[in-house]
Image 1: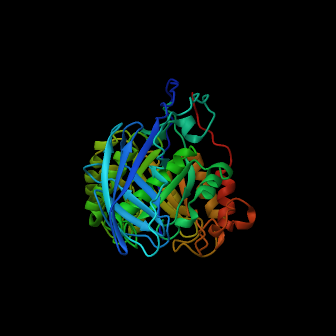
Image 2: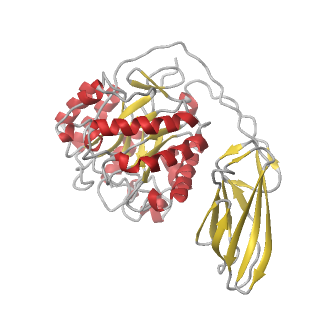
Image 3: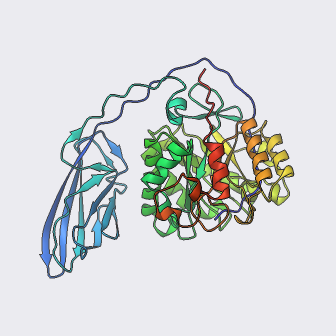
Amino acid sequence: MKRLLALLAACAMILAPTVLLSPPAAAATGCKVDYTVTSQWEGGFQAGVKVTNLGEPITGWALKFTMPDAGQRLVQGWNATWSQSGSAVSAVGVDWNRTLSTGASADLGMVGSFTGANPKPTAFTLNGVACTGSVEEPPPVDPPLPGTGTPVDVNGELHVCGVHLCNQYDRPVQLRGMSTHGIQWFSKCYNTASVDALAKDWKSDLLRVAMYVQEGGYETDPAGFTSRVNGLVDMAEARGMYAMIDFHTLTPGDPNHNLDRAKTFFASVAARNADKKHVIYEIANEPNGVSWTAIKNYAEQVIPVIRAADPDAVVIVGTRGWSSLGVSDGSNESEVVDNPVRADNIMYAFHFYAASHKDSYRATLSRAASRLPLFVTEFGTVSATGGGAMDRASTTAWLDLLDQLKIGYANWTYSDADESSAAFRPGTCNGGDYSSSGVLTESGALLKNRISTPDSFPTG
């Protein structure tokens, strides 16, 4: 869980001529799978799995299917990263076959065991598309009118202009949304019903996907966690929300400890999501116990990895003292202002917890907002421990300030964790209601009320 501190912001308005952009055409999809049991013995079998992409070329893929019999288990596989959870099996492409052009195939193989029957699986999906052996052409989509539609419809691909996050019309915008809790602990909270509620009932602009690196996260299963992140990116895209991919470093606090992991992870997700216009990358959640120079050095090694695959996406850099711009370490924003990261189209993270961080932190944010592009990638309505009573007055003061400065934010957390910072009461994620007042905590009710008010995205 997070423990955060201070904040940064942005302030100048930049007006530019209106440019109307049509959305890119949706791609044709389709795939075919040939599953062949090549040998079988008592209690075991070997199978060949040939997956053919019939649609537009894809870079980065995951083949999924369900074992028809409860006694069937994956033992090992090759030419992909294989995993099994319950009866669900997943095979994720590896370096030499991760790109499949139209008509191209990947030949995979696996060894399995069984205790009863050994029926062949029949329902396969490739990146969520059913492999029926036919190609599905997408229906024509009329471009939305300016100022209408989902947040992504209206704003298109975002970029940094001056000290602001700006939309396709070069106008400053404020994104308001929610952060997941650690997806290794609260995966049950992120499903069709909950993400529908976030987009439609909460009217959120943003889903921040918190992928812990340690604490039972990415380092334990890189392929599995990468796949989970990509799945949530796709769910946000389907509902017109922006997705922030949070490389959730916390302990140890020096992001350089995870430099190689970060390069591997961001090379993968940036290549896979490069053609999407709704993805934002947060490369180090809360650096702590480390100098700004070390954080800057980390950023200047990770950002080029992202840029090699996705040159236009916004990247957010964590700051010293649990992303407080150094305030919690007795410093201030001047160390970033005087020694900024050498990269374009970047922002700096600022975190706060309303019950712990008040006027002095708000003063830092206000002062920094005119010098640095800032995003509050995480904040809480309670104390820095994630617990205690909600501080309504301080939270309201913070949100009013962020609105005034047009600084985007994501609240910690869209989960039913047993802590007062959570939006839902414990046990909510076992059901399907994520919107009614009965399932919301005091913090959740306040945030839903703030986020669901109409956006004011400028288009001209």
